[in-house]
Image 1 (cartoon, one colour):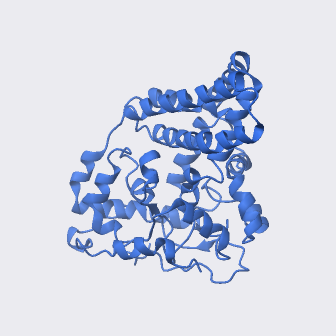
Image 2 (tube, rainbow, N blue to C red; image 1 turned 60 degrees about the vertical axis):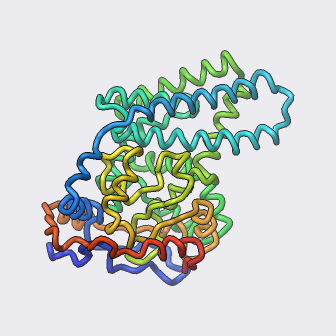
Length: 371
């Protein structure tokens, strides 16, 4: 493999298309940047390894979130039975959508075994968060998300990549992109189904668990309560600020950069899920310590473009003719495999502290044009 010229920040030499009629991904022939940046950071800051570990507080937060939604479902389905449907929808968006988006973060942490040391307890934490979500999500998300980390951007292997049908159908139409964002949860399920992989044992457990939970909710609450939970999940994984990180993470907003972080107040509610460059670099670090990584290795992260508003991410994505499901980076499997070699970065070659321009980049995150 030829030397990778992207050292030390590993931004690609590729450019996203400036033509609004292009209906294909940007292309790169190098491995994803996170493995090399992780090695560069560890070469300069070996103390980062001390941040690895688990955070049981995540399970407590997950249990509280589940209790909130089940309580809301009970009141809507059993007490406020005369409440107009428009009010129910409003509650489902403002409260239900916000809490349901948090479930995804809990499931994400559990999927990486960052809640407890024992994998079984992480599986059970994922199932707990899945209880009010109506459909089985946690174990399939765990499976496909770990594959996304392993095969980021690889043709036909990264389950997070939009399908060709999405690219060709949605493209850059503001109306279709709006509908696509609303239905993002459905598209996520379809992408997994298209890969035609045999369900694993824990996915079968998840299905059985969800069916039993739904039956109990209907039995002891009502169908109306179950419908409220279902609509909440639809909102929480679609046109909602808490779901904007799905677009923020890998849709291209700058030439040469395929992963993006978000530094804003939403991280307080959603357990720092916005720090996506940091997470891909070090998926061994739980949410309570990921900002410490950001502070320790600031010279590696400051120069990268970052978002400061999830609402702005959604607005830009829909409004810009350069944005759409096609605004992703793809690479061949051969390039991915060739980059799996051991790559050691001398400490003296790492970027100097203070070399970044974070303030300038973050201040321009909202005002800069997308084109």
